Image (cartoon, rainbow, N blue to C red; front, side, top):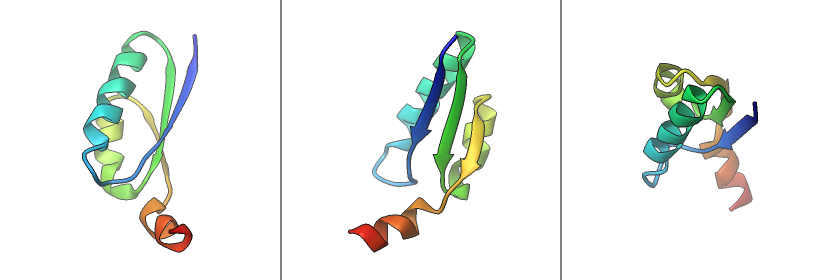
Length: 64
């Protein structure tokens, strides 16, 4: 099976599609990890994916 990593942040409506993809891939037996801010951790774990915390919102401010 495959291994997938999604890198996201909590904004712009991008979290719901990532969670849906994570759930769908996990249901098919793939290993899914989501790297993002702690504010999305509960949703990621509820979909059965592994969560890795990263304060992307602050990181994006520094590179913008």
